[in-house]
Length: 426
Image (cartoon, rainbow, N blue to C red; front, side, top):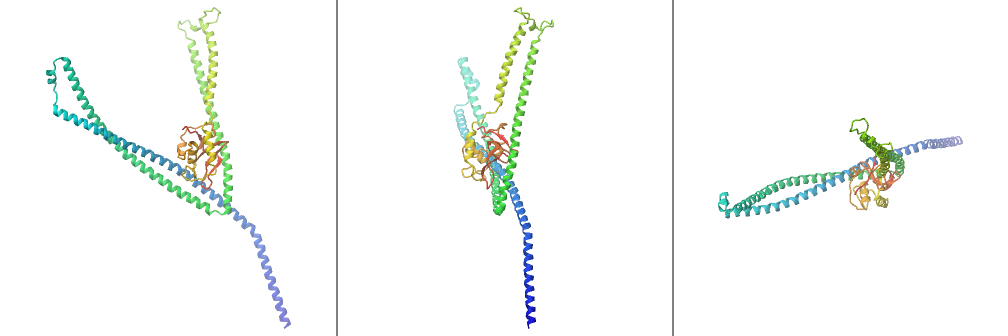
């Protein structure tokens, strides 16, 4: 009995020891593998943030493109509708003019029916003097010419009416087509915004934080590229100025060569330039030579002064309207990015620029429009930084205020690579 109890006790102790050993082994294993598992999670979150940034950037580029296409389609639609309305008004005017001409032609026809036509023989026999005959003939010619003019006017009005009908139909088709294009761009933009929102919603808190870090890192890269953009613009300005200086020097050299050609005129064929042998004051020095020396000095001064004026005109003046534009841009900081909006509740990139330039919440144009504006090589605050897909208000030092992207809104950021600087002339 005692042996059995001892055996049972030993067995119990052995089982307890095995359980403790197993738990210890499990704890060691978990401790050993825990850092590795955490590292994988961090890498996955980083990859998730980078993928989200790439997707959001691609979607934003799509939004900017759609914004430009939408704006262009709406502008084309409005233009077509104006032409359509103008054609309608002209058709109405033509109808009134035709009615007036028709009344006059009808009256003329009734008059000719009642009075009958006057023949050439009747004018000859009925005239008592040549002057009376000439007067009657002139009046008859005028009446006939007036009739012919009315008929020609009626014909031309009908032709113009037909042309305006063609314009009316054509512009109606264009307006309808552009309306469909605008609707399609808006539909795609709405789907893209929904996709961007879904991307944001799918991010975990850690991935969202990493996304912001990724965005800041990319902004630093953009700042470096912005410096390159400014350097390129300044290099272009210097090259342009050097080209102008070289051209001016060449023109001056050509003028001097022309003057030298004029000075060696030798009309008497004695081998001596005529101007050089004039010495009225008897000082042994040809008078024209003296005058030309003085003249050359005067011209040098004049040319120098002219050169300075050209250099002053070549330097681009500060943008006088820039302060208002920049002030409005700063006032919009923090406003949300809203596709297709021109404020005041939100802006897309070209909508923000439109408002800042004009002070009106109406679209001035798109990035496509801004790209056609005059380029400036020495950008001033208030100028516009733009490429085909994005735009912002330049505030100096390589920075611009722009409606950046969905979920970010209006911020200060570096001028983006590929942008050029343009100036609004309105």
